[in-house]
Length: 212
Image (cartoon, rainbow, N blue to C red; front, side):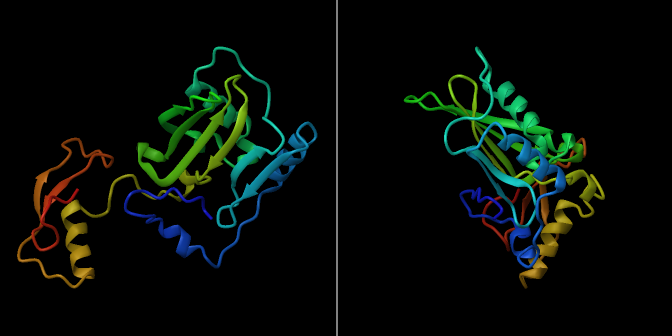
């Protein structure tokens, strides 16, 4: 907890260790939304994140959630369903500013999994801020798996990095006790200053390949 979305190199989300001693429960609004939903869905199951208070999973153990929709587009339908369960998830409208990254439909039961990641102010991707919405062939919700951070905009104090890529790389080398013979060589950097675009560097003391 949070939900594990490990990449090829492992999970590098520093919030997990940082928040080990901290627990956050669901808000009154979430509990009310859960109570209201349970009136029509007795089999509702909600698991809350102990570190963030958000709902990390929503499902109906005895079926599906909500009404269906004919001829739906998976990403549009997923967006509707996330808005529909926003209060139960513990998210604000701004938190659902998501970038949809893919969708997969299984061949047997025709269930579609829609994937998205959270973006913060300036369109910067929130690390590990992923969500998966699973929809059946009739457009009903099967489940939501959520790791979106609530009110992320309130935590952002700047939209431009405080260090250049070269300065950050030199600081990392210093932290590792590696002395650099020269400043990191910049191979390519975004001309527009867009922090979402990568800078490529050459630092032989740290890596035989380019650092991005």
